[in-house]
Image (cartoon, rainbow, N blue to C red; front, side, top):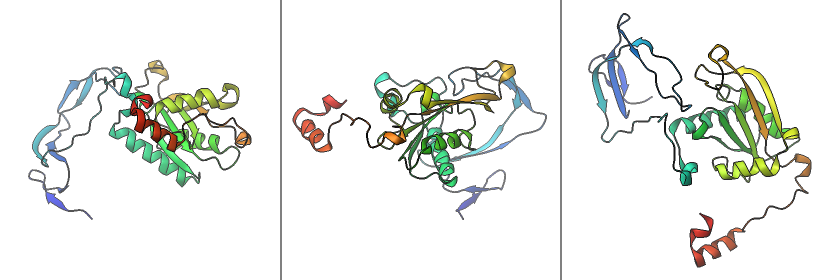
Length: 247
């Protein structure tokens, strides 16, 4: 149960703690042409078309309300691309994580939908427990309800990789995957009508690639040791020279 208030215009119950609440009237014969819009793909993905007119009657909001949005033509500066976050990335990542666990996939350590290819690629981090664990997670992430819509690529990495840090993800693909062993193509999967990589008559279905960027399970104990600063040494260097070396 949540606290509600009565809408001024509609009389409907509205969550009292909502950031923004809009009451409006939509009539069946009231339409105007709108679009095209800049879509999440970074393209104008649809043609102008008639859509219902929403005639606003009241707007209620909290002090300093938070309005979530998606900048379809947005692009982060090169040096902070990993820091870009949007609310849809967080929601979709959490939903895929929930559905992986609901399917019985153990030891998922993180899931991230990267904003630069939003909907198009996901990264799953896990602690490998058995042969085929990584590929199993990739297949489910690409086909579950939260991940199948538009999801063109699924990359699975070991638990020492932060799935939201694109430098490490790309490094894992380059250092731990072999295309012949690590890449599989799944055909005739669910796509979307805004998928500009396909001609309009073929949109709705797409192929998907799963990339196993994990250390091969049978080599977990023998794979070359990763070159890295131990936390204690890293801290000493930072204290002496500052963060410049690690930026």
